[in-house]
Amino acid sequence: MNSSAPEQLESYLAGRWQRGAGVEAELTDPVSGAVLATVSAKELDFAAALDFARREGGPALRAVNFAERAKLIGAVADVLVANRARYEAIAVANSGNTKTDAAIDIDGGIGTLKYYARLGGTLADKQFLLDDKPVRLAKAENYQAIHLLAPRRGVAVHINAFNFPSWGLWEKAAVSLLAGVPAIAKPASATALLSHAMVRDVIAANVLPAGALGLLCGSIGDLLDHLGADDVIAFTGSSDTAARIRSRPNVLGHGVLVNVEADSINAALLAPDAAPGTPTFDAFVKEVVREMTVKAGQKCTAIRRVFVPAARADAATEALAARLTRTTVGDPRREDVRMGPVVTRAQQDAALDGIGRIAAEATFVCGTKDAPKLDGIDPAKSSFVAPTLMRAKDASARAVHETEVFGPAATILTYQDEADAFRQVARGGGSLVASVYGDDRDFLARAVGEIGAFHGRLLMVEASIADAHTGHGIVMPQCHHGGPGRAGNGEELGGLNGLRLYHQRVAVQGSVELLAALQAKAAAVH
Image 1 (cartoon, rainbow, N blue to C red):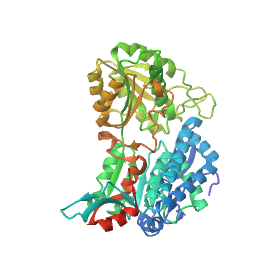
Image 2: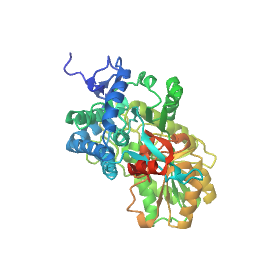
Image 3: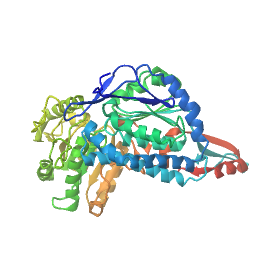
């Protein structure tokens, strides 16, 4: 064998590391184009992997209570913390992350594990989750009902996106493991190097029971054809892929539960009262630019549409452009660089194509529809997209409400009054998050009422929290993550509510005495 050949990442299935046949995909450095590793899951026995997780991992997790499972999750976090220094270099090389970008992904994953370890510890020795209070069903006071959440007896298949190989992996695994459901994680092939390194460290540390966590590096093959009614699929990625997963005959035939977090054309809204020079206006400008450039705009929560009052459109455009043009783009290994490339040439092509579609109805403020030319970087091998700010020509623009550019691009749209603003925001068809910037609390309250139904999360920024909020695009484990419509109608995280995905809600009818005994073994979800 050629000793200089790239490493082939193995999968960890059925309690052992396994190598697939041939090469399915290459993992590259998006700056130089160098091949870093390859993946393949061809000819691996997925049915055996699922059986092992059900037979070994599930019973081992359910044999201990929530607090003991929380200790397992905490131990995983400790392993990652001990090896963190290695992960940053992997994120820079394979994902084109700056150190700041890498920290968001790596520390986001570790932080979520730690959060659920702490949360699970508060559940002590409980065996069930209690959903709502007992209800009386008949004249006899002794006959009532409660709703319990019972952990599913199957496997959770976690299909993750390329943009967060750490956070996407561990935010799903933390909740699944705490629920007592084993998981097989399938990272996106393009950036699987970090997921692989992390799982290898965790497995080597032997902190989880056999079968509790698996890793699939390569194509998913016929894995979904071996799932049953007790299994769960949690998917993050494009709506097209989500539709294919949901429509698989075996998934439909067995009623496999599918949770989706998909496309999202998120918005930032500047309130009519937010004038230039105020802390709230400045917070708006800072956040829009940050969301455009952090991880080169490759976040499902990134701001794509920027709504400003018509009377402040020029001032907002100038302020955004001034800040955006100060962003240094280039090789993320350089200390002065603030934005690196998108992860692959294919993602570069997709982003530039989307920019071109929106630009047909808009004008460029910063950037162009072509890849930038950067000193010392070969444009034929790299995957850069310039920070691109556009401004819609008029209210008839459609592409901006229908096209998610998964890169460093956003479009300014003007509105005439608040009714017009709320109507335009809703045209996104369902999003993960919108942020609203203003100091008129009556307006902020009306905004919640008018656009809340179209989003999974709202960040309402006024002067008092302009420097304190966690960010438009940062998903906090305490809060629900997901969104309606095109965003997939999924629900993840949200504290203990995240465990619902891995439980069956069951109404238990019986005597008051029996129900009291069950309640003693249960912890309230809320």
